[in-house]
Image (cartoon, rainbow, N blue to C red):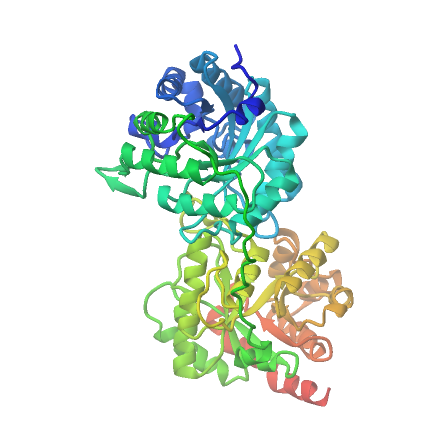
Length: 619
């Protein structure tokens, strides 16, 4: 039995009370936080239905399904990728049974948990498909409306809204999450969110989660200044704390109720609650929000546009010593192995010897596939302090969320690190800890964008960080990539986002390198070419057959196989490649063979860097 009148008609009749939290309430009732809450619709359906009944009895006129994050991308992490329809249909039916025709059933759609391009690697098409699949299942389960909630990225916000509109003509409520200062977690202001909701055809726009009632009131007031759409407010019950191993929220029901009235008076037509709330909170809100006693503000006022808080970036060549030399002098960088202990002295001494061979700088990267090393920022700071060398620190976004990434970057800048090679690290379980979990919050393009924001004095959310940073973003590229078009497209996007130089994977074929350089010539971006000396015929065969993107030309492999002294032959081939680079590129990045890293000085002597300098100067 469906509630009457239809939801759009009900929106014209006064304030509507929505329900409260599902996940944190399940946790309060004994379900561990590491469990997948939507799965409880299958494992503990009576418990989920009872929660819905409690919210309905408390006065909630909207019941949200227990489907936050119940789309393929998140279900896959729990081995439930093929259960999207089952979970969502069952969740919708549980809520409808509990509502007994007294409440509108809202199909709850949360974020994907994976960043969409350009910040992450998920394409908009893949995101749209995941949203559509879930929403189709919710519609099949009999929901009355769709509620999109806890979305932090405006791109994801728009994709989810478009998916809902493509699947059905049911009413759609869209919520964005905001930070304490009234911006969304990805930097947009309330009036920007309203504009996108209107353009996307939403029926209701609002905010939920991350902030409590006081901050939510400010957000709703600012939305009301720009919105002709009905507004929805779902604040958290204060900030969480850990009590005896459980997450606890401490905002009292009457406190939430007082602000519920103020939210309605400010313009919220739908008022409920989010994380930490319980049926007691909703009962208090329901008692407070007698629709005959609350006059919802409906008038708009014009507010001034927000002034851009960004500052002018420091000119690229003034950001670091390396940046000043890029494209003007041929640079030789050597990959320097990071120590696996806290003793940095052997690394400092090795670097000192390498500088004597004619090396300009070092690339500090974890080339040993997800193994434990001291943090490269510490090594970069030590080498700068003791040897005066301006290193290139490889930085990967693996295993850090967007907050941790920005914290790392601020720390690096404080310590004098400026040159950052945006890298893609191997999954965490490839190395010392096979059971380790891997997190990719944002991808390489997203990381370049973060650096660009900081170079304009802002964090990714648009908050000021003071003076602009002086980062020099370098990005990786593979001239021998199997999909050359996709590789070039990624590189162009990263250059447009602020990348100042390119460091390639090791190159063995000049024809492939020349084709790559020709295709990116219009970018006018310095290219540092990777060079890896071969040590044996087996080494050449291994790279060619087992390492993606490391194709070794037939003639080169034949030379190594026929060589009386493979090491000398490998050095000679690398030396020939190296001497050809000054006329082609801005520098070389020499990656010593893994099994000869303790003999890297010998390798560099064999490459005869002095002769390369002569070629560069004569050129």
